Image (cartoon, rainbow, N blue to C red; front, top):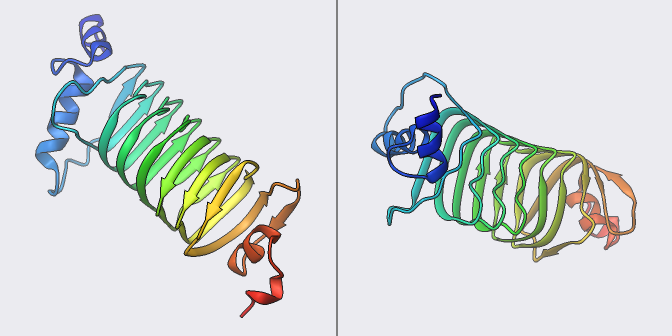
Length: 207
């Protein structure tokens, strides 16, 4: 990427290479995009446009700063590594996305994710209302804050730290794997997420 393109991307103007790709994805929205994978490094994006639609398709993004924004995120077939998405809100639809070392601190959004992997991500002090995760995987993540009316369907946890998380009225906890609850205990697999993280008798939810 040229110095000129990098400068524009950092400013978040529509002339930057990254912002231009987002505009291109807006044109593809709802259509079959190109199969080419675009790669972006160390760019910042500030959405100064009243158009809050933020689609991403078939791209790899490393070391970006997209924090503090309110977006309608529709991301498909993407890989995001070392991204700062803290203090971000809005609506997020993630399909076949891989997040690695992503900071979701104070994420306040309506999230639906399918076939998405979260690896070494920080979900600190989040507020998610009625999030839906379908066939998703969480690996060595930290989750604290509120999950209200959550649905986890055919999901997998691997060494997930749930200390400080509040699960209010969960709808579906079809989770297998390993996690640490507030009592510093590791447990494995459902039924109903091991009786809602050991707070209820297992027999009460076994089928």
